[in-house]
Length: 274
Image (cartoon, rainbow, N blue to C red; front, side, top):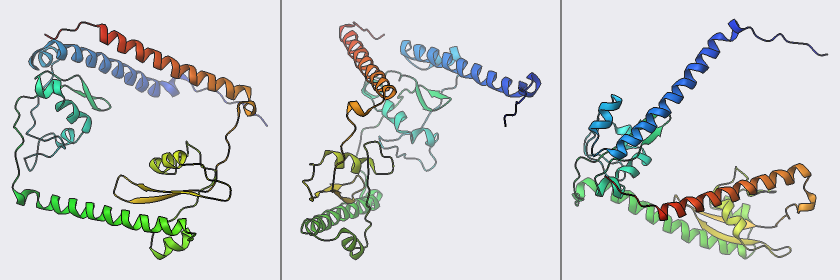
């Protein structure tokens, strides 16, 4: 059975259309203001002119370090300071050393700022009491990482000598996962494990390839590859799949050529800062 549906009337859609129109106009207006702010910040020797022209407020933070730590219990604009992208701009050579205005930073959608360093303090040693807990936590983490590595090497040797992975994991209260048909784009396997698995030697028939892999959090993972399934050769792809592959590689080549052209233009350009 096929049932025809009447299209909605303009009155039915009016509220949604108005909201979409307002949103589109706001996005366009915001983009234009960001572009204007970027130009003014680049041309100005301070933040006064951009603030006056665009009717913006100049806000002031307290002192903070490269990791976002502040010296005030309730630091103003702590959420902004916690943003890694914002701090990277603040501690860049242009902003920190040369005293220039930053480029426009968008820490989140719909929000844009320009930052300028008004005062800086040289790094200095902190009293032991201020960093005692941090030192203890670091030492525990490093000690735990060393213990995990030692245990990982021991268990890897057991596996290489024919031990059963499931039994070893149960004995040590560890987790063990078996996966089949894993591809490079598989999403439910940790990226670091996936990358290592595809870089390991291909196992011989009825054999396994095993490696110990340190993880970013200090843990250790044992990666075991028991077999490799051949990917599809070109003659196994459909015409539409081949067309998509050609389009993908054309886009990659175009991006590489554009990047090379951009780098060449930047190398030949004569830029003066005022």
